[in-house]
Amino acid sequence: MNKVMSAQEAVSSFVNDGDCLAVGGFVTNRRPYGLVNEVIRQNKKGLYVESGSAGGDIDMLIGTGCVTAILLSYIANSGYSMVCRRFRSAIERGGEAPGSLLFEDFSLDVQTIAYHGAALGLSYVPVKNMLGSDMIDKWGISEEERKKHPKLPSKKFIIQDDPFNPGSKLCLVPTPKIDVALIHAQKASPDGTCAIAGPQFQDMDIGIAAKHTIISCDELLPDAEMRRHPESNTLTGMCVDAVVRMPYGAHPSQCFGLYDYDSRFYIQYEQASRKQKDFDAFIQKYVRDCPTHGDYLDKWGAASLLNLKVVEGYGYKPGVPRK
Image 1 (spheres, helix red, strand yellow):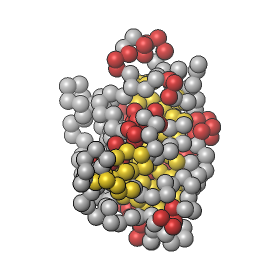
Image 2 (cartoon, helix red, strand yellow):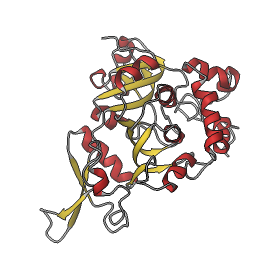
Image 3 (tube, helix red, strand yellow):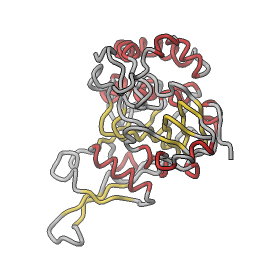
């Protein structure tokens, strides 16, 4: 089955207002910016976002008013902003105030365990990781507020006795019910098979757990070519609903083996995202005024993008500014 679509077709077909959206990658590493930009262009609203350690792409979703609630452990453009600024602004307005952002905080290891549990079809996972910390005592989203949102579990967690170790406690953390996963891979084929090189983070788990998975890829290969090296493949096409050929689809984040992250973007975004007015202008220029991913790449320039190509043997591009 040929699952190749444009970004516009994939997002319009599978992402709906009010969905639970899980986003792959890690902070400034292999984030699916191209797909996120299309979500913004289509003005999807009321999203419940899962992202583990998130980056500027999620901050953009927050700043454009696409997100109702976010469950994560960290959000930053590391090296440029310690906490993403549109996220911070939304949190400072107050978690349950009208029009603000609902936010729940978990430790990173707990979230990745929960994503794996979701991939296994479990409704919760037992952990010890947050016990003894104030993550147990402090809830970002109250139990009363959760009742208003069917996409949210009724509780942040439940603490109970360990049935196999008397006197020991367990923290039962609900697993997310993911509607759509957005993932960027280096390679994919029309039948949905994809190969992620380098760190995979939570991407395999969210891709399996989601009702619908959209893959963007730098390189689209024939199905037969992907089958020649099955040991290198990450997700089977059975888990994937749409494949979008999208060179530099992770830009401005880095993509292992292909290109480094783009400091120009992060420096501009660090300044623009400080104020909503400047952020809106940034989004207008680089997202809304760019109908396609190709138009977006044209804004940044072919020569500059090619200059981000990693150097053989290094795994990164020497000389790229790190601050």
